[in-house]
Length: 290
Image (cartoon, rainbow, N blue to C red; front, top):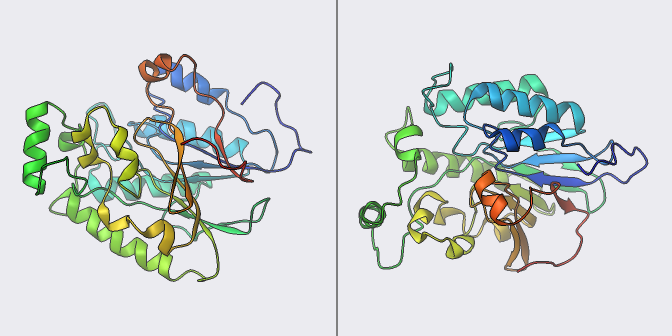
């Protein structure tokens, strides 16, 4: 992480990162140098490790060998069916393939029992989520999904998911999203009602973080209004997400939201520095950021 190497005596931390995009050599080199400070550090990986199965396996294997526990949720890029990928699975079969890959590496997925962090700031249940988007984050003035998509096409702001993220066997991405929302909400509702959680999802669970997007139409591909109250309803001590490539800390209804993405090299170069170490989620360092 910072060249100091592994310090077994350091207090374990719960850390998080997303949007590693290891298909870019610059990002791949940073991941290759990523190491915990403590032998007990956990790492939450909130999606978009890469697009090619081989790249995803390389990164998650390396991280799982270094961190005590690695928890992964899929981003949209992992779900792409890329013509350069020898694994041409689509939709749900691709997701299930990734889940089995993670299990072979000892990486926890949204399909596994939720682990409990017992370190500083705990105990807290870590809930990795796979919830897609359903085009309900509409741009201003658009009353329907069709109107929102038409506006996005007119503006030339159309996510590559439209041609690369297939919903098979569901009839649409929004239908897959609805199924994931229902399944995930049932699992969360079955948790101990007195137990706090850390909710981890690739996409933001609330609309507010998308308000700062340079191209507001892109919000269509950023989440669903169906999860708008989950941080309160399911007792989140913090929410971890990525996707927006706008790393920051915000607060909603008194709950800390951490956008932990690295993004593409062209983006982090504009910020003047390569991505830093993963974000510390627990122990909480106090209210910082926006």
